[in-house]
Image (cartoon, rainbow, N blue to C red):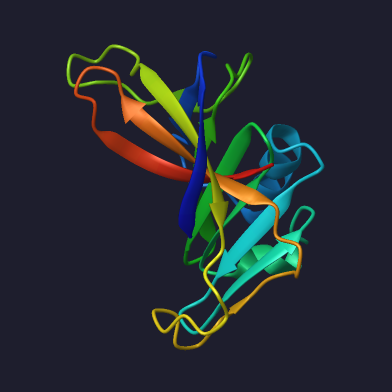
Length: 162
């Protein structure tokens, strides 16, 4: 993605993960719980990447890793054998969650700065993706940087719907 116009937010972001591995049914439930429509999804296999509108189907969750995202949140997952780990990146607070918030080295909840950037997707001729990327003609997404407030270092870059 190439970067375009910048936007900053002042909400109370949340970054958290699961404490124990999840099965595919629980993963599907978490995606529906944390990523409301309108949403996009990105599915990644070793040979290709696919972006699409809407939440992924349960069958699509079989891919090795992916993410579902909307305007405020991105939920990433990684499959390991028959279980999944997740990471939730949210620009807003997440009340009543059973995900654990990431902590800093002093074991206090991590605090984040958010930086939103609009983006333009790479052209279809981009060579860094030799197997190609499948995506809709109208791809309305941007990027969100999660910056450690103590160090100023970008820790995560999330996709976001515009």
